[in-house]
Amino acid sequence: MLYSDKVLEHFANPHNVGEIENADGIGEVGNAKCGDIMKMYLKIKDGVIEDAKFKTFGCGAAIATSSMATDMIKGSTIEDALKLSNKAVVEALDGLPASKIHCSVLAEQAVKAALADYYRKNGVDPTPIVGEIGECDACHGL
Image (cartoon, rainbow, N blue to C red; front, side):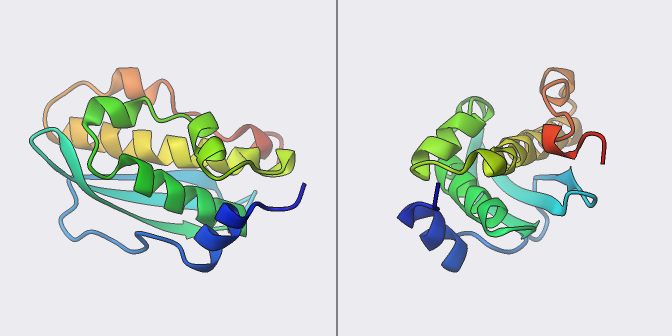
């Protein structure tokens, strides 16, 4: 499968690239062995994600999924952002090649890692979120 126009657009012109100074939540996921590392920054006020930015070291699909994930969670509640699935990211990008699905998993995990960090900073047990964050399946055994 070739990349969809949406994937190519988010790769060529990614949205929300950068860092948020004094971010309320920061999450980093990935594995240098597979080459994809995502860092997500969140600004949260009154339970709503006011801003989301990312820095991704990886392939075009990793950049596109990070870009789309930040678009999808900006303006949403923490509860809704926690429901973000890699499948929803793939669908929003009009699909990904099977070999690149792990990039969408990393995008989902980066959001959850940043929210877990936000919970920790605010005295909330992040265990339910952290339990969902694992190493990317494509990276196992490398």
